Length: 63
Ligand SMILES: [Zn+2]
Image 1 (cartoon, rainbow, N blue to C red):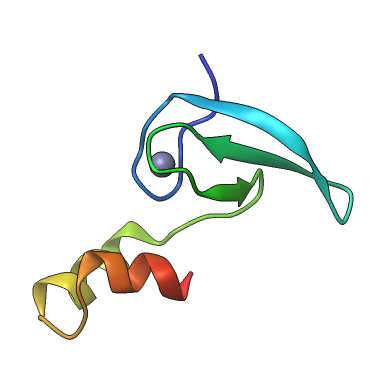
Image 2 (image 1 turned 45 degrees about the vertical axis):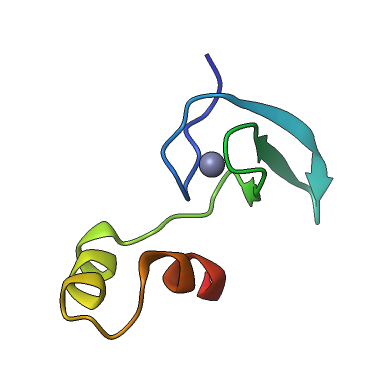
């Protein structure tokens, strides 16, 4: 099982080379790439989402 995607939470990811010396992963579910160290503050994300300021997809784009 791969690392969980930081965008959609899918475990179907694979290593996809390196970026600035950091491990890069690619998600097979949503097709996005993310770094091993990249994190999303889920509580903050949820508060923005639930307050209706931005849609979930827009938030993902900002990250
Ligand atoms: Zn994904």
